[in-house]
Length: 305
Image (cartoon, rainbow, N blue to C red; front, side, top):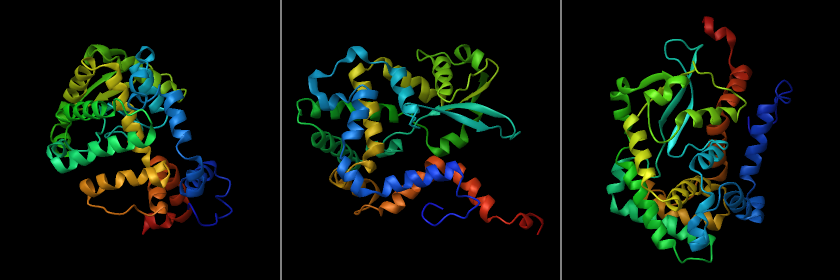
C-alpha cells in the first residue's frame, strides 16, 4: 500500500496519500543528507527551548516550563515521563476513556540499568551524539552523567509487563472533574489532559472518565522531577526526543548509534531504510492504513463461512 500503484477506488483517500507521502520522505536519503540536522536542531531550539548539553553554560533556564515542553512533544506523539491516550472500554467498545500511564524509558526495562555493558554503551551514545552536534563540549560529560542517573532513578519505579498484568486491580478510575482529588500530585494532570486534548480541538467534560495505572511510577517520577533542576529536566526530555529521532538524521549521525545497538540488541548493521520507514508508518498511521487494507482486501463473505 505504501509503494505499489493504488487502485482507483483508494487513490483519493487522504490518509493513504499522507501515509505514502510520509513514507517517501522517510526513505529519501538524498534529501535527508542534504537537509542534514538543520531541521531537527531548528525544531529543538525554536520549539522545545534548546538542548542544554549542546549549549553549555549559555542555556537559559528562565523560559523553562515542564507542561509546555511535554505538550509540544505530545503534538508529535511523544509520551515522555507521563503517558496518556484514549482507549475503548473493555466491557463496552462503544465507550472510550482517557488513560494516564507510565511512559517508556530509554532502556525499556529497569534490569537493563544494572548491565554495565549496556549502560556504558548508552552513556557513550548520548555523549558521542552530543559531541557530533556541537562545538561547545564544556558540559557534555557532566550532563551525560546527570541524564543517565536521572533515568536510572526513574527506572527503579518502572513496571514490567508482568507487573502491569498482575496489578491491574490497582488501576484507578475517576472523572476529569474529580481527578485532582482522586490522584493528587504536584503535577497538574487535569490541566495537562485538558490541554493535550485541546490540541485536537476536543474539550474534555468534567464527567469524562479517566483511568490511571502504574500510580506509584507516576507519583515517584513527579517527586523526582520536583527535586531536579530545570536544566536536567530539559536535558533529559529533549534527549529522549533526540534518541527517537536519530533514525531521521543523516547516516553519519545514525552510525553513532551502532555501538549501542550492538551492546543492547546484538545487532551489528542498520536495517534497510524501507523496513525502518515501513515500521514507522505502521506505528504512527497503522489504524488508518489497516482500515483501508481491510476494506480493499478482506472478503465480507468470509464472515459467513
